[in-house]
Image (cartoon, rainbow, N blue to C red; front, top):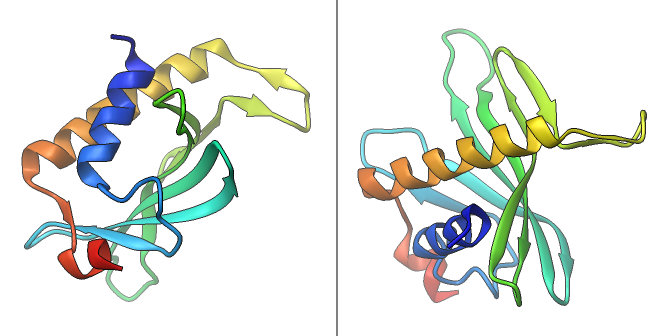
Amino acid sequence: MDLYKQNYRKLLQLLPNLHTIRTPVKLVLLGDTDVEVSVTERHPHRLVLRMSRYLQRPYREAMPDPDMTIEVYLLAEAVGALTYCDCFGSRKVFCPELMAFSPLAKAELNNFLEQWLSKMIMDGRRQSVAEIAQ
């Protein structure tokens, strides 16, 4: 099974209502900062999600770290990373300003996404029951 399909299955474990998600949801873990997931685009067979974990900083606003944009192909059951941002910088798979695609960024971001999703599953992070019922 390829990485895109693995990432889809892992995302589905974390978000059981992935196909019907409309409002922002939180993936919670007791004693840790929530990961917020919101739909930025919705098409019949494709979703674009933003996943952000906010770091609390003393005397400052919370900062997303990491902050990823991912696309979900519902019929193909595949997930791919589009952008990544953390306190050190950002990466994009495609830069519209330069009309440039980076295969290296694509590989690195999708590998990071796989690791992040795996860690959230191993840690026991889950969508709250109240949000699943909506």
